[in-house]
Image (cartoon, rainbow, N blue to C red):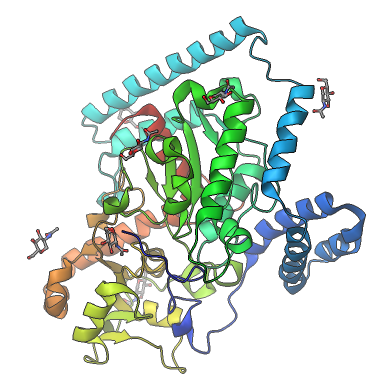
Length: 489
Ligand SMILES: *[C@@H]1O[C@H](CO)[C@@H](O)[C@H](O)[C@H]1NC(C)=O
Ligand SMILES: *[C@@H]1O[C@H](CO)[C@@H](O)[C@H](O)[C@H]1NC(C)=O
Ligand SMILES: *[C@@H]1O[C@H](CO)[C@@H](O)[C@H](O)[C@H]1NC(C)=O
Ligand SMILES: *[C@@H]1O[C@H](CO)[C@@H](O)[C@H](O)[C@H]1NC(C)=O
Ligand SMILES: *[C@@H]1O[C@H](CO)[C@@H](O)[C@H](O)[C@H]1NC(C)=O
Ligand SMILES: *[C@@H]1O[C@H](CO)[C@@H](O)[C@H](O)[C@H]1NC(C)=O
Ligand SMILES: *[C@@H]1O[C@H](CO)[C@@H](O)[C@H](O)[C@H]1NC(C)=O
């Protein structure tokens, strides 16, 4: 069973965590753009009281935006009562029904049929591409399981895929999420979907293939959870209320018993919150960082979301341009992070402070700088902490430091299309005592191949605003698209 731990930080010791030591100022360019959008919407919501703050946003001062967001959130939370807001939404709808069930029924049926036809064609095209051996289709670094099928599937997605984002629910907990720190991939996806002008978004729910419920479990934890109560009932109730709202107001949920709907969260407790509705848990697509296959994560319908640590809202500039591959790295392996969970306990017992080449720290010495150490190491250890996911995998990819995955039951992000063996090493937990021997035994040519894989796969884990082709936003959407097609490549 899942045990409740500290809610705010499952990691410690990653780029922004305890191990960061003196840690330099990391630039927050992308993250702040994201938050500018969020803040400008908050300003609209709160009206004149925050006019002056909205002006501060336009002045472009980075610190004030973050501070402002804190203030605005604090002010808004005081008035927040999600269940009441939801109830009033329902009555509004009844008075002014734009989704009347009898509304142009034949047109609606035609749209649904057309959609299904399109999906059938997409499936056929993907299956065909999967079966063809085509020499001209490139597979850089060998990172794709089936490059032909992936490119075809991606192309079909761009051509057809439409997502409807439910507009219901109160701002802050819905339509918003954290854009920095360890759960940033949650806020960044929600923000891109809500404000990113994505061509995948449709305003017409009848022409959508999937329905997004844009609530943030991280903000639920922040605003609804009573610290140290270890009681997640308020989170489950919020989720349950939200599903009740959209399933009463619109026909789409009941029609599919929750299938073709998705939620997305990076918070450790998102799987628990999703238990607020049985159909959501059992049938909907849950996009989760906490992708533990022995805790109900079902890779056939759920999607593993990469955990991306945006300390101060951005990626360290050092990780944005790692040194060329031919610059040799002085150390074999590196890890710094808190003693969280059994795997790390095992790792520390065997390696903490024991070896000058395979360097394992609980606390990074003050004179060391986390991103620089990643760049100076050939292999970066990515042991699970309290939960299976770790931002270290993505940090290692950015640093072109081969990730050494030390986990059990973790379904790796995008493993539906990516061949993780082409850019990472998996070491069985029971082999931790032999870790150094295993890494030393990897031949140079295999290591160079892994580096090539890392360079090729990097774009799939990058956040951009606006989102770019094949980046992490599109890879997440693609995973959802595959679940909607009910197709495995
Ligand atoms: C009610 O419907 C009218 C006409 O469709 C629309 O102009 C108006 O904005 C709606 N009001 C609300 C509160 O949704
Ligand atoms: C092989 O791939 C190329 C480039 O994507 C494409 O133009 C060509 O039609 C493909 N050939 C076959 C037989 O599918
Ligand atoms: C969906 O089903 C629930 C529970 O059976 C029901 O209360 C709700 O009214 C239904 N929604 C619609 C739009 O018919
Ligand atoms: C969801 O799955 C659980 C466990 O398998 C089961 O007990 C429950 O009845 C299911 N709920 C629905 C609505 O199918
Ligand atoms: C590394 O490669 C670059 C070009 O790819 C070359 O200019 C440089 O001299 C190489 N450095 C070493 C140390 O081999
Ligand atoms: C994954 O789930 C299993 C079963 O509940 C649990 O024993 C294990 O500790 C979980 N893994 C992590 C890293 O939390
Ligand atoms: C890991 O090692 C254990 C014990 O040696 C073994 O039972 C298990 O099958 C191994 N798992 C993998 C994925 O190799």
